[in-house]
Length: 498
Ligand code: ADP
Image (tube, rainbow, N blue to C red; front, side, top):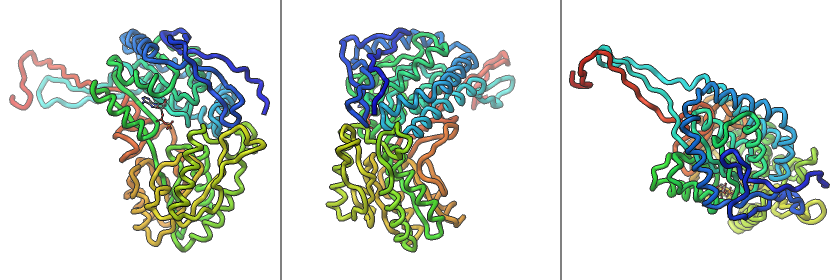
């Protein structure tokens, strides 16, 4: 599709100035639906740029820390208003750089808007607590204080939502920020940064360095001027991030992979379950950490489910996300497409039945993009690699089961613990599922995707390291508790002794 977009050279945002990478390197941002389209050219930053950004953030911290939170909130509120006005432009930019369909990129920008309004509201809350002291004439309270400089590393699948999930709570709590977005989707972070600048965020409070993981993300982890790190991405990279944070004891939040399941019971509303499985499995081309890449179906409805689900998957219209009739866009890049293709081979070799899909889409409208067919494997065994490992593409594995307990075992029998869903009309099963599923998020009669910004987001096991994103939980990560005792007795009072 022809585009009126003129490729532009973008810069880092350091100390309130737009600057090129010091070593002059650049990275191309190309449209995954049509790699002939150059969306923009971005800096390939290195340690020099990152260190300058951290220095700026450190210098800005003392003043930002003491800026009253309600004043910080006014800036965020203005940013949310600007985002709202630019939503359509930003969604189009995002579809160009990331490939997901316009309805979804609008949702991504909306998530950034929601998070920004939410955190603006938190500027007038951030409540602490006052507790009675065990001693007379003594006052005791705990209050939130910022941590310092936050280093944020974000992935490409939610190019504006995830940067905002991290930057907005960091800022409202009084931290200054260095953000390193994913190399595949820098434009959406550029747009977000411009909005914050326009909203009046003081120079150096937010700094952005573009570039790849090891070159631009690595130095952020090593810089001793960074106090806390929040990372979303693969489990393999999360381990690198965690280890790099350890020597300097950086507070570290990891949001990693998933192998999320939809359980369909015999008594489910089957059409609803199928609808959910299609959206959960193929929304965002399966490139969500919460994607429903496994579906376990009770034997009584298994055949019926499989027939209809496969039919629906087959009928999905794949193409350029800017075309309103497209239902599923491309994979993000060649490497991701190769991963998908290799898992198709793995699934076949493991003896799973390929019911639809299984091929790269080539030629015609697909000739210059990273498109893959919506793919469904059926009659899978829970121990197969396609049922255990995160694929991050449009591949769903369907497994039959007999009993509710067996379904829970299948659900919990993976290394991840992000999201799980159950479709049932049996209230006992619904409640037992939310009790026994070992995931951070559980849905009843809804697919595994669809988090809302005011509730905690995150997972257990190899998905996370105990922190949560969004909602009030975000404040817990981006602030420290400070406990304050005021003794107005005019004498030495010894706790636990007097
Ligand atoms: P994905 O496989 O989904 O692309 P990654 O975990 O590789 O996810 O990337 C998520 C984010 O982490 C990106 O911003 C990427 O540049 C960054 N990243 C990748 N490798 C490293 C690394 N060694 N150090 C710091 N950041 C990294």
